[in-house]
Amino acid sequence: MSTSHRATRLDPRAPLVLDTRELGRRAGSMRRVQRTVPAPDGWGLELVRVPAGTPVTLDFRLESVLDGVLVSGSVRAEVDAECGRCLEPVRTAVDVDIQELFAYDAGQQDDDVAAMEGDFIDIEPVVRDAVVLGLPLNPVCSEDCPGLCAGCGGSLRDLPDDHHHDEIDPRWAALAAIEPALDDNGGDTSVASPETAALAAVEPETGS
Ligand SMILES: [Zn+2]
Ligand SMILES: [Zn+2]
Image 1 (cartoon, rainbow, N blue to C red):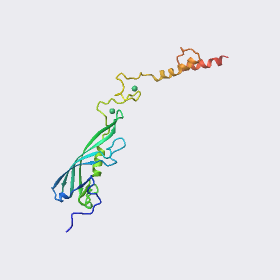
Image 2: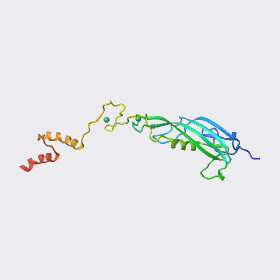
Image 3: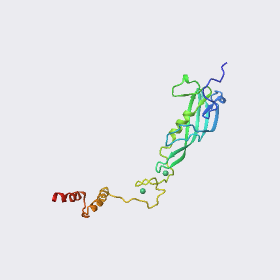
Image 4: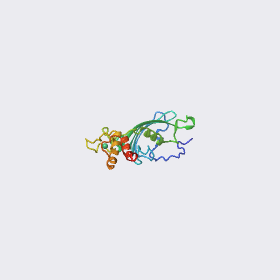
């Protein structure tokens, strides 16, 4: 007689380890697992991530099938991100569904079928992958976020409604920069182009 308990390196009490012993490996038996666990480190990237320690809500159905246990259900986690328009921090959430078959005996299965460890399932990689794939690509602090001013980079939400920048033609801007220099020379302020200004500066030397 073999025992139903097999050696496992998983910690059965770890928050993201599922215990299937109640199912008794009877095809058709079912069990619901609802729990809230602290988010581990490393779910997401620097700018969009699930903060470690924030609550992750799991609502799973464990179903014994012929070759293993089918885990399906939903995961909800909190997400810290940056508004894609105004760059302010955003706290939002991600809701994803998972469905994964865990084989009793990995040796007889394809490589792409996850394996159980004895009577236990390490659900963390499956949950992590689903959550990371479900992270918002372009989060916004609010749907009507006006974003940043293209002229000065200020937050339009904080700037007055009539905030604007006068459009300056780059060529006129160059002239505006030259004009004070002409004044210093005591030159003719009616000079209209940089080329004329250059001639005016050279003239006295060539004339003598
Ligand atoms: Zn925003
Ligand atoms: Zn501005």
